[in-house]
Image (tube, rainbow, N blue to C red; front, top):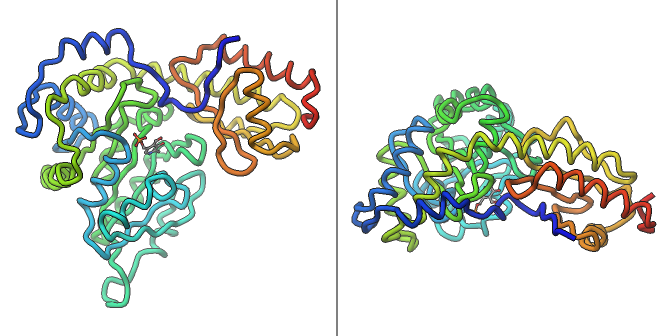
Length: 351
Ligand SMILES: Cc1ncc(COP(=O)(O)O)c(C=O)c1O
């Protein structure tokens, strides 16, 4: 039985074409600024986001942290959505590396309202309080189930932040999923933020890397931080080349992943004991509520594993399924078949 692995879109492997461009990549020492392929990737990313400059980073986490460290100073505060990747899954890096405090603010479907942010901004004239220096948004929002943050909402937040001298950073690990799902261009999203981090190694299928974009001055500071953290890479063109290929050739196909996610969401919803907000599935992430199955996440994952299906534990009662390039339409249909079998063969608690 084929293993159907829905744990993450990070599982995608480089395509044949990517391996070819890696082999052929023109390289140089990037710490000396002499790797032409890295430079091309950075220029392409900057152009796509409509920002002045860009920096190749090893990972999404590194890109986000370089942004926070470059925008803030020790003692500053950064507002983040309460379920943001930066807050939940980056090892407390702003505190550990930069003496920067994160202030979680609850959003709706991953979206921070300007009003709730306004309420969280500190009084700059009060010496008791930290300075609010930065707001981080996440698009698409992973923990909210791949929801797109609409450009109108970001525009409003950005206008507020500018009036108040606060910067905005976008964790765009899956920005191109947002672009494809909404029809809003990366540039339009880019115009609502001071900096953005985009991942090449998720749905876009490149093997490694992220790009951070922003103003020339900001990128110069981020480059210093990257070196300080040991992220200065030498002949990095070999890993930049598939990233560049991904930006040029792998974006439009994300629509397929979204279609498959919608299909899978509908199928899961038909299984007794499982619930999915099908309407809320906008991109490639599905949050499946298994509470009514009477099983724990671990028990449910074991049942799935018995049928060679893998998905992630996403907090009590929630299992996350992510569609990606290695999941075909037939695979989604196959999952439905296996789930029906799982129910019929009397998974004791699925009723
Ligand atoms: C929304 C979001 N931001 C950032 C990251 C971090 O990316 P990386 O795993 O490359 O550090 C992830 C990873 O899954 C993510 O989902």
